[in-house]
Structure formats: C-alpha cells, structure tokens
Length: 382
Image 1 (cartoon, rainbow, N blue to C red):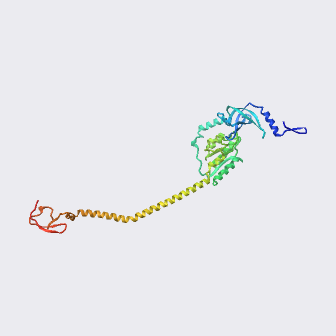
Image 2: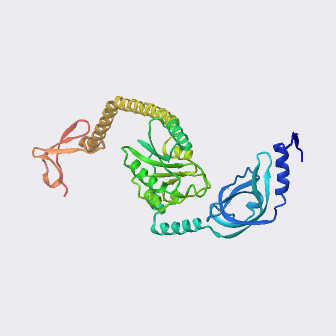
Image 3: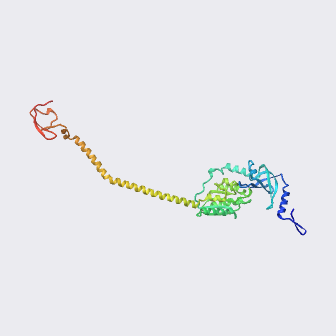
C-alpha cells in the first residue's frame, strides 16, 4: 500500500487508502440483510437503482444499490415500506469514500409495519367513500386566489409561486408555511389547511412538499390529514413528493399533481394562451360581423329591386285580371251571339222568346249583328 514517510508516521493518500479499504470490504459478500425498503430512487436513464434498507425497530439504515435490469426483473418490484431480505456484498465508492450494499438477490419477508398500517387505513377510508370519484370537485377555471400549504422555507414554495405568477399574474397567492415532517406535522397541516380554506377569495389550495423518504412523507398519510383534505371547503390539489410517491392524501384530494410545479399548471390558466385565444375569437367575431353586414346589404339590395319592380308587376297583374274579365264579359255579350248568325226579335212588348207569343200579321223588329229590319209575321210554329 502506497504510503508517505514523514518522520515516524505512516501517512496514506486518500485514494490509496480507499482502494485498500475497498479491497477489504469486497471480501464481505453473499451476506443476507433484512430491512424495510425506503428512499427508493429509480429512473429509466440510470443503470443503478438506489435505496436504503432500514431497521424499523432501531432506525439503523444501510445505503444500498442494485442493477436496474435486475431490479426490473423482480415480479412484483419491491416498494417503499416493504420488508425484504437482500443478499449482496459491501462495496466502497472510492472517489467519495461512500459505503453501500450492492444487492444481487431479493426475497420478500412481507409488508413493513408502516406499509401494513397504511394499507389497512387506505381500505378503511376507501370503504367510507372518501376516495370516491364522485366526490372529486372540478378546479375553478379562474381562481381569485390560490392557497399554498408548504413546509417552512421549502424549496417547493418558490417553484410553485414562480410558476403560478408567470402563468397568470392576475391571481393572488396566499402562502401558509407549516411543519410537514415529524410527529407534530399532521396537526399543523390540518390547522393550516383549515385556515387557508377560510381565507377570503381562496378558491383552490395546493398541498406542496418536495421529495423525501417514506418516513418523511408519512404525515400526508395520517388519517387526520386525509379527512381534513376530503372535508375541505375548497378543492385541494395534492403535490406531495415525486411522481412515484403516493401518500394517501393523493387519493382524498380532488386532483393529484405529479410535482409541485405541475400543480401550478393545473390551478391557473396560461395568460398568454388566453390572450391568443381571445385574439383568435376577436378576429372570428370581426369576420362574422363583416359577413353579417354583407349578407344584410345583399338582402336589402334584393328587397329594393323587388320593391322597384313591385308596382309594375302589380299593374301588370291587374291588367291581366281585367283582360280576363273583359274576355269573360265579351263571351257572355249578346252581340257575340249575334255575330255567330243569331238575331234578336222584339215586339212592342219586348224580346220574343217563343213563337206562341206572336200572331200572324204581327209586326216585329229583327236585330242582327250589324243593323236590323222590320218584318211581319205570316206564320207561327209552336
């Protein structure tokens, strides 16, 4: 082992010391360790899955890693809070001097104490209907104010406020900081949530907390917090932990957001997109109004043309009607009958309609179509 001679001391460079220590630790292999899975971190872009094995009785923890492909091959995959027995070897990350347990095999012992308790609570509350879809409320389209419940000096606070004010500057953000971790956190969360809901103009509330271990997020699975979320007077968006984290308050909330920043996008609209849609609608209204005016103008032009033609058409119709009447009157005129070769015979007593009205030697006047003549009756016929 490389060393430096400084008088009577043996001094080793850190790199050499870590290499030698890693060699010693590598001898500790095929060891079985039992504990609860926590702080599980997995990404498709990573070749390694990171987690911590914890002793629920003493609180002792052991950082551990496992190849992602080996982890993904497990059916089902271990989850946060689950108790497992893992076989592996000790290894040292020489650059940073960090010790970890490299897992090569995993066997389930059963759900951890916390996981079992949470699963029982989840089933109980689900049976009560607290997680039912028909209880979920729609988020307001244009909230007057957004309530933000977050931890004291939490990094998520700045991210959420920045995202909200950037998207919709007109909204007011009411921030309420409280304890979100530790044994007193559930009471603090319930009290702060109630105060936010009572604030004037607050139309929606975001529960925001960044990622953390399984234990860190336990307050958001506390029954008191879950019931307060379900009974809140205004809609609640749960944005607790990372996307893979699912505290029970996610089920009780009206909407779940994968991250606090995603929650900001859910509760307020994008002002720029709204203005673009308004501009598009305004342009469409202008085109519609212009088209309506043009249609009205065309209709008025057609009406004026019809009105201009109406008197002449009326006179023509009246003339045609009169001509029809004249034609019918002429057809009934006695002179038309005379024109066909008939004659009208009259005496001093009027028109003769029967031969019995005449006597031989009587004088009659005969009217023809043109002119007439006088005559004397020589003979009558019945």
